Length: 152
Length: 152
DNA sequence: CTTGAAAAGAACTGCCT
DNA sequence: AGGCAGTTCTTTTCAAG
Image 1 (tube, protein in one colour):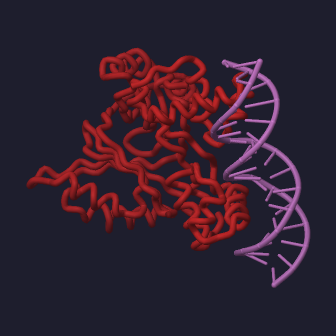
Image 2 (cartoon, each protein chain N blue to C red):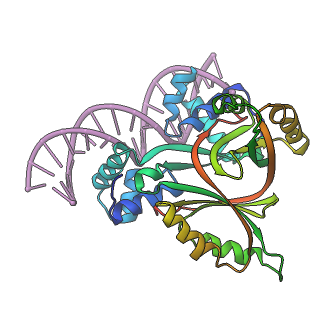
């Protein structure tokens, strides 16, 4: 764990919103010299704070109009191997994210599908057929907003 | 909605995993010329498929060791304004994402906190005090894995 | 910590197949 | 559509105040 000053926080805040900005552009925005901004960013990368740049895709424009969050409680019967379940679930192409969680459910999945019939196919033929699956709860995504979070 | 050939898909697959690659680097990887790769990426940007590059932060290294998913059902009493609720919830610094969903819950939040006592503070003093909040369910994140999804 | 400058590389443009 | 060669701009690195 590293500690940041206000300038570091400002850099992170700017980069979390748009990672496509150059060190030079950030320097101008924050009234820093270009080498200073560049060195600070490099320091954060080296410290492992910046884990990577990821591309955000517009799923709807690619024909995937439906996003569903699934909560899954594993079946209690028998010894269920978490590794086997995770292997099976990550092999489903429509699964975008797998969260192992504590609480009412054991896993929380983010799934995309072309439309609701397509989602039903994924649910019935890919998810429900897994022997480990117990209770399932679904939430269909209407809209989402990402926020900077407490770092910024 | 746009349709992609195999080359576009390969480009997206590469970029989803690491958005920090230049058009030239991608061209070499996929046996394309630099201008071709560049033109295709630009075409995808113009079409709105690439909605942006976001920086992924390692929350734990920044001192935020706890991530919790909250499902919130709005209170039925009175007319609850979704806009008011969204305004209040997005003003909480610890909230990283707000999903408006259909199903057992109305909203699904991703929240980060320094530790469990800190999360309890956020839950009690920030979330539960909102008049619109009805039923709440929490899932503490143990581990997560992001996958390319069906586009790649 | 800054400026200035040079080397490297990326982005973009026309022209040609 | 795809590629070649070239120009322009930015990033990155280094040297010096």
